[in-house]
Image (cartoon, rainbow, N blue to C red; front, side, top):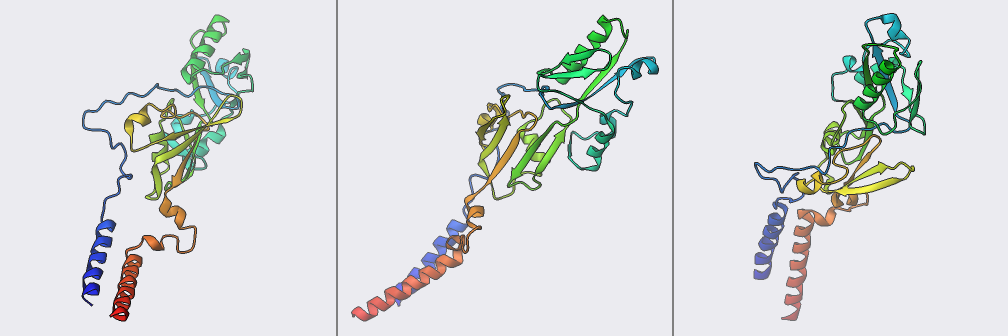
Length: 278
């Protein structure tokens, strides 16, 4: 009985100590100290791609002249939503349904009133505005146009172990993966911080996969997917605990009560063996 009286408290203490240990894979940016400077690989602006939708508004001092170059006169989309990110289907995002968009074709072109076909594929938003302004002026159509360009379907998808998975729009020229995860309400406790996947659509229609570690800020900043592109998909994989929950009693062997019961059972067997061998 002395064995039992000594072994059981030791087993309980060991289980309690292991259960109180601090997880090392929860905190973000563990390699960053105060004053650390992180250098992203490159600042990647959103560029026009086939199937993008753009709102392009031309304003001049003459409203009648402006109407020649606009599909429809509407309130600027940014006036109806000052948020840097809106979820598709939200009240802020619904205002964009009033806008007539130009759809970029497979060659990166749009058909613009009066100017005809314009190749804008690969351009940044401000470059499109400058290009159209120069075309209007050089053709002596407008002397002082103000051209406003906005993306109409610039969004990314966040799925997996985040608080609010879904597709999210943003009206910024660049957005980071941290911005995207913040839109989705951050990772849950069951999300793997060290193995987040980003799927990026290539020009040929294929998708390229990247793996990033949110606990390593240096590695994250140097990743090609630190700055996101339209239609990127972020997948946060569940940790082992969450995966085990998909099977009956999957996490039972990892609970303190299980090991206390096993320890008590082992002590009982040991005591029985000692008693029978005397």
